[in-house]
Every structure is written in C-alpha cells, then in structure tokens.
Image (cartoon, rainbow, N blue to C red; front, top):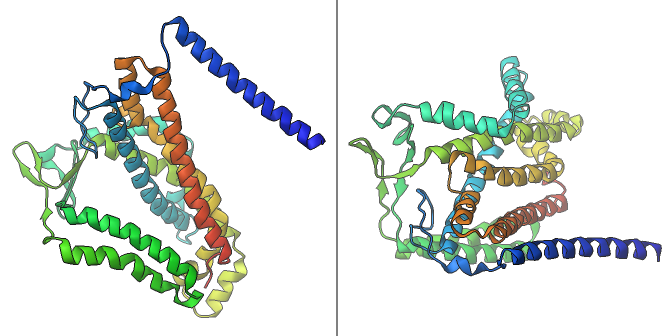
Length: 368
C-alpha cells in the first residue's frame, strides 16, 4: 500500500503539472485572441531553401516544408552516425596501439574535441575551414570524380529510375522474409536468411531496371555540373558532428575493449590468431555487450545536436520551424512539432539499438 500511495502521489503531481502548463498556455493564447490550431500546415509557404530531398519549392504548403526539414535532419543524423562509428573505432584502436605516435595523436584529438564546445567547432569547420577552400576552378579532387571546394562537395551519382523505388519495396519484403527465416532456421544455417533479404530487390532490378547510368561532376563555367552536390553547410555540419561525437564514442569503445578479460586475447594468441584477427573474432564481439548501451546514448546525442545546424543556415527542421514561426506566429504549434519529431527520432533509435542489444546479449556477445 505504501508503494501504491507513493506512485499515486507521483502520478497526481505529474498530472497536476501538465494541467497547470496546459491552462497557462491556453490562457495566455486566449488573452491574445489566439488558439492552438495546426490548420496552418495546409497554407502556402512563401520561403525557399536550397537543398532538400523531397523537392520542396516556395509556394508549397508548410507541411511540405516541415517534411523537407525532417528529411534533411534525418540525412544529417544517418550520415553522422555512420561516419562517427567508423571514426570512433579507428580512434579507439589508435589509443590502444603500441605505436606512440598513433596513440598520442588519438589522445590529442579526443582531448581537444571533448574540452571545446560543439558550437565553436561547428563555426570553425564552417567559417574557418570549408568556406576558405579554393573555388570550383581550383577545387581539390580528393578521389576520382570527387571534388571539394568552397561551394561544397561534388560526387558521382546514379540516375534515378522507377525500378529503384520498386526495388526498395522489394527490399522491405525481403527484410520481413529474412527475419522470419532467421527465427525458423537453426543457428548454423541462419546465413541463408541473407539470401531472402538480397534476392527480391536484385530480382526486381534484373527484370525491370534500365541500364545503370552514372552522372559525374564536371567543371562547366564557374561551377560543377552533373553528379550530386552537398552544400558547404551540410559538409561542415556532418564533419563537426563526426569529429566531436567520435571523441566521446572512442573512449566508450576503448573502455569496452579493455573490459574484456585479458585472458581472451591471450587465448586467441595461443590459438595462433594474429592481433587483428583476435580483435575481430574474439574481443570485439564480447566488447559489444559493454559498449552498445552507451553508444546508443551517443547516437541520440548526435541526432539532437544536429539542431545546431540553424547557426550556419543549414535548412533542417529547426530552421524551417523558425521561419514558419516568423511567418505565421504559430510558435506553440511549431515547437510542439519539434518536440514530437525529436522525441520520435530518439525513441526510434533507442528501440532499434535495444533490439540489436538484446540480440547480442542472447548470442552471448556474438563470440564465435
């Protein structure tokens, strides 16, 4: 009864705080002859912003603008998470390296980024680094057909065709089949589930796709034409997030590796495995059980920190919300949309990582 009473009291306090907040907001809006109404999302937006994945243009609805901002935010988060994971693993291995130079370089990177504000680093990469690169005529060719200049990053691209959308649907179907097979097949034959994942989209592409055509960036006049271009703001944001979050994640991964009993690596060496093989086959699978929960927190932090894009003018969800508020005055509605979207992204990421964590724990860390 005592536990029930404390829980009921806590629930009453939360409900009272929510009711007070709702009454405060609605009362203030009523005094200004305003109300909470999301109908403005169907109105026409007059503003424009450059890059977006959904084809938004000035004159489209505010809902379309929010969709474009959300797509840009998700793109930054996915690119940042992928690059941060690779950079963090490399940094963690450098910190554990017997090579003094590599070890000290990784230590300097980690200490520098962990002890300076992310906002300052973002401004550094945007104003001091990316914007100071040479123009398109003197662009750096960092890889074949990949150019970097003060106008952004230019990459080769595959021309879209209808079969790609159909292949994406087939991939989703294949993912469902693969999950079902993974549960039905015995442990030693679950690799066959990958065939169920890959076969449907490959079959669709083989039957329906036209010959793949690649467009490459080429300098024409004062800028590059062809391929796909990434704006300086996008490049600066992704680089800043990667550099910053990798410093924290590297220490998490290093701690996970050190948390594996030293006898595991010694046993692998006794079996004749090289150091790299021992890390990949013995140490890393066991370290996953330690690092997945804190790494999930780093992924969530990176997604939320992407909202700093508004400082350098990248058209993410926060930027769209700011401009919408200035045009419509619907601050409560726009902030509510932001809260709901970021909460959904965080909960979705946490749920996916939780599923992966449970799978790793069920397999005993994935050790072979």
